[in-house]
Length: 227
Image (cartoon, rainbow, N blue to C red; front, top):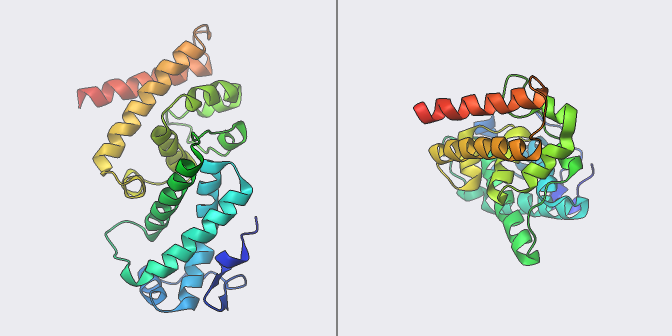
């Protein structure tokens, strides 16, 4: 999906046709990008689509996602000289900028963050987790109704974990919370999903994918409480 031209340019240098050097050491590339537009262009090529996807997931608007993605990279370029590696991926810093811009976008419009059915189809989950892989295939609409009832921070957590595949530490950096706080929030979110799904589909047959999902969520909750 094409991004606005202003997001492809820093100063007078076009980023649109620059190849991504996947062999370049990221730490060295980041240091270079603090003063070199070409190096920053490689970072743009490497992360722009992921940032766009995250913002689109939060806004459900192509136009706004394109505009905010452009602003993320313009702001990143402006602050590159002050970037400090604190042990989390560079992408977490970009997501943090995007998080703040999207929060302002919602505040300005007084909108609640709503996940659409199309957005939910972007989820990628592993078959061994409690994240509703089988439920997605059986009744995505039911899961959507449950997710929409969650507070906005829990919806964002699910987006970062299942769409962006970030670690708890990375999510913490994005949301401005500690890794422990993110683990706790994720635990509470799983339990909330379990309770809401039980209310949403109380007559699901025993042994059905939904019942197995609810059982796994319960096991995760019990294990966490016994730690």
